[in-house]
Length: 421
Ligand SMILES: NC(=O)c1ccc[n+]([C@@H]2O[C@H](COP(=O)([O-])OP(=O)(O)OC[C@H]3O[C@@H](n4cnc5c(N)ncnc54)[C@H](OP(=O)(O)O)[C@@H]3O)[C@@H](O)[C@H]2O)c1
Image (cartoon, rainbow, N blue to C red; front, side):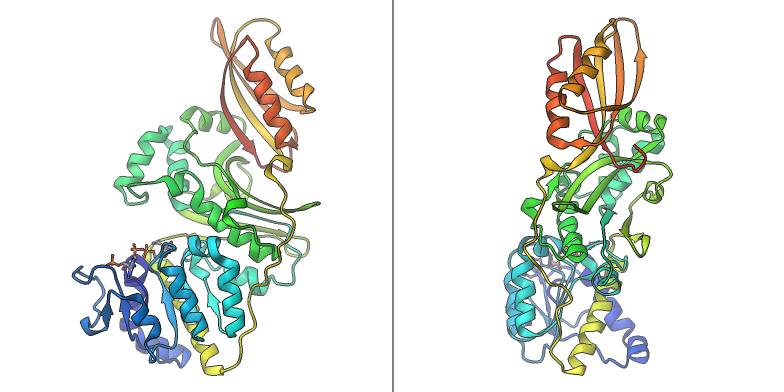
């Protein structure tokens, strides 16, 4: 094992305490041979024989008695080199590291294919939710059209608090940090980067197209306000941070942003730190996978399942066919993707404003679905939901609107993911 932290610690406990139960169920005698950590003096929740622990990850990978490597150290370095080294030595690897896969996926998967050993990563998306295996095996023959996921528990917890308690973004972030749902530096979660890495992985499984983290457009939740949540509810929506991988006419689109979902959508009811992945395909119609997206115990279950799978492959002794085949496939630029917008404007409460705003949308071929206005004397709030139009048209319309003399500010833009607009 490389790492014995939140996930690794839970896995070690399971390997030790549930050894007999695992053997009874699977026939496998899983033995912990070596564990790499950063700080050897740190107290460990799970009992590990001190003789097994090292600070040198290479010692774990190179140990001839180690047949299978579990990478739960996180980060890109040295995790990437260690995974490659293990694969090249013909050792199956189980990893939970979405950041590493999103950054170096093709290289790692081809090393696994060349060596004929499995590289398994069920825990990398959705923590304890089985989603990688269903997508790469059960649904391998389905022409999946779209995958939409709530794949970051921190932000879903925060958005749920904002929606249900009218709390501000700053207050819910502080609360999430106090409860241990958010890191001291929450950027990867609230900025959408973590969800983008998972979106890249989901896209590659659903479509065999490698997006690569740099090609995933992502926006976080940090600009959302309590007012956005309130207006969304009033319009019949809830706001969720969505990781979307979609097959469009000209290729695949992979993107992450907070979006309004109709309250009737199955993902709208996913509350708190729970994760969920919604899959659409012509034959299966709609599938929903939901559950704990993080946490030591649920994530260790996914890792352990992969360990058992890989151990069975070792016993079978055959070359392993790759679970995932990546082709460079066409990716659709985000500016070309058709989206629907909700726009909130602060305007002068004067005749003609609405006509000017509608005109600006019209100048860029964006048609309006609905308008709601709330006046307060000399100023007013306009809430507009548009029909589908390419991102670049929506952006151009927004820029024109922002420059209108009677428009005080474009207070908010949130995309709308709804089949009925
Ligand atoms: N936590 C979750 O709920 C969750 C869910 C899904 C996926 N994951 C993924 O699982 C992986 C592990 O996450 P985690 O939360 O378990 O992380 P963590 O608690 O920070 O544990 C990391 C472990 O790796 C060790 N380590 C780090 N750098 C090392 C180095 N250079 N050499 C040797 N050991 C090193 C650490 O040693 P020390 O103990 O000495 O510091 C620690 O034991 C990450 O890729 C993460 O994205 C986590």
